[in-house]
Amino acid sequence: MRKIGLFCGLFLLLVACSVEDVSSLKHPQLIIASNFLKSSDTVLFSNFCRSNNLKIRIHKLSSDSIFNTIENKGFNTPFSLVLLGSMKDLKNCDKRYFQRIAKDFFSEPSVRFEVFDERKFLSLGINPFVFVVQPDTLALPQNYSDLKNRFWSTTDTNLTVFYAHLVAKKGGAEKETWEKSLRKTRLAYQFNDTLPSNRLRFIPYSEWLKIPQKQKNKLSLVYPNQETSGFFADRMIAAIPKNAKDFYYAQQLLNYLADKLENESYAEKFGVLPHPKTTRNLNVKELNLTDVNEDDLLKALRKIKYK
Image (cartoon, rainbow, N blue to C red; front, side):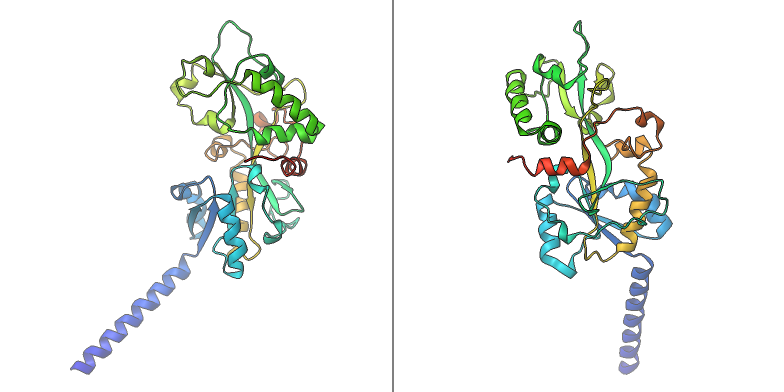
């Protein structure tokens, strides 16, 4: 009887293991490393997961931690996709550890993202630098140059990506001139909306999205430089590690996002807008984005020193 019991126990253990293995095969797992998405943000990909019978996990880490893990783990890299919240995250990134995006990467060539830096990185959406204004008797500011003549505040600690646009367009001397002028009119940012420092806020669009709707109803959103050279914008970035374990699902997810991020309301859940130069969204296409492309912007960022 003991032998029979032992045999039955071993049989049940083997069956349980085989069922677990089959279950794991039925639900492959894609691990995303991001410095701005949280683990709970997997809900953004729920439809994709259901249609592909897939599980997605998000590891929220600093950009440096992500790059160090990819470099040190080599073939054991746990991440199959990297999503970053800003161009400045790429300043110290070694692109050798990422896969080149082939020209036939997307199933629909007409629906694509901007590819840059030797086709190692994708720009998934833009994060414009905008004005948020409490309307008063003064005329609304229309251009970035208005910051030189009006008091303003910002949540962006160093405005690195904004200044990189100036470097890309006119060189480092132009950046120095602007910095000197803006230091004279910049006020410390305060979270109390009634303070003078909040009458003109110069912030990324992603910060505008965090403002409660009740407060937004009392504010005006302005895209600067619309009648001149176009507004400046940061980017949301995607890249696939060279040793990604699930390249297929990473590619499928980016194809999925190429379609979904055309929708402005979906893009805003990531803190961005669709790219005006690639989207089919007519409302966004009407926005005037500056002609500084991702390659020029990244080169300028690598020239700027910041903490």
